[in-house]
Image 1 (cartoon, helix red, strand yellow):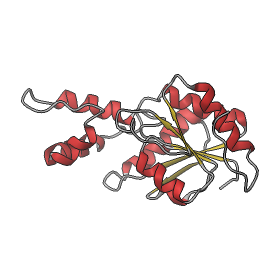
Image 2 (cartoon, rainbow, N blue to C red):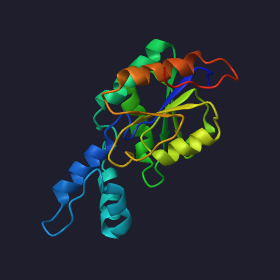
Image 3 (cartoon, rainbow, N blue to C red):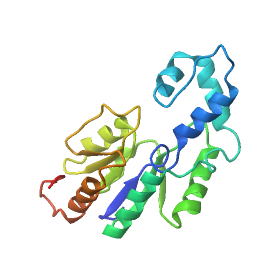
Length: 199
């Protein structure tokens, strides 16, 4: 991995996995079933076995992963990081029950991100980079444990709104200057220096 690597999660960060899944579930929902939203998606999946099975069937459809829509705020960070000088790299989890997703994710990246390198992994914490752009707190925490001066940029969602960490800058679409400052600080930080995230 290059020393100036910027790592980008795909699902929920650059590609609208949650929005697409919630919309597909709504199309299949009967009137007596609970409404699934972005806020309750993960808790609903754990409490209803039938819902988890339905989600598995939805995501197994050919081209489901490939047809996810890009997230504008995530793409904005991606292009800004490249402008600063980062070597952007996609770091995405490979779903065990959906092996077809692995190739579709590669094709999605080729479609929207040109020739960016793609790593499909089961453990993001093993991959080095100066920063990680990820919407999921568990992945951010695991990655930061190995990087005492690393940076996480986290797009704000309904399921991570309460997450905080001293090395995490939340990106809600209104604090662009803060995000750019943090990305620049991580890029210019010299070896051994602390990471200063805010002016």
